[in-house]
Image (cartoon, rainbow, N blue to C red; front, side, top):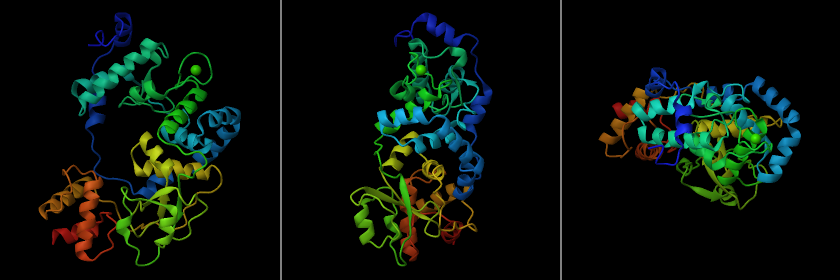
Length: 357
Ligand code: CA
């Protein structure tokens, strides 16, 4: 198959020399953690004081490279350094798995074999292009590689040679890694000069159902709806209202750059951490509102039970997979509305208990 996809026999042989299935990869792929950390704990460890200090030192150390990257791609250096910190702790933890062995194992018996299969062919194309030696092509068990933790298809689309040595090296060249991340964000719709998002406050009686990833409104309209304390931002820019821990926690208006970060990694907590870490590198980004510390996130089995019970009430939360996606949020919202509760779409233990009655 690789040969018919245009991979040379010698490239294939070098890539697969000594490769055998790795049971540790399969164990990692099948592990589904029962407990989830609350978002505030995740943010605390993502935005540790050590990481902020290290990021600030690297901003100074790489100032001229970052300046050149900003000029070429229009992506804010603080967001880039924040992503660098989140993905690999600034190049310190890139993963030590052979990417070929990991993807071959996942293509053979992983949970998403077709995806791994496609990534394996993309990885062979990288080797054929000569950017990296097979022995250096290392990454996470899932095939995320280098300082930017790009999967091979993302690498083929967005990796760039910024230091000019002829190779796109996201492992050993921080200039290549940072510029590749900037290129990816630029192509994902990054808006130069705009914030990723801003913390806001909501008036009492606010309709929390408006906090929905599908509802994007210009900042001016949010202001008319009573959203308060909006720091300087372009009034015409469109934003989504985000309540990462439901209506009892902090509220944010998030703009296009938040969406661009989500293309990098489709997790709201991740994008929030990148945005806030970037702010923190500039000496701001402290969250003003309190988190609902007494509220434990639902465990995986509780989330599955929630979906089953919403489903039994005809609220269509989607498959009972324990993943709280758009459909489950919609179903939660509908149930909250039926109870006369604030309809923030955020599942709590209290809500699950009401469903159990
Ligand atoms: Ca290079």
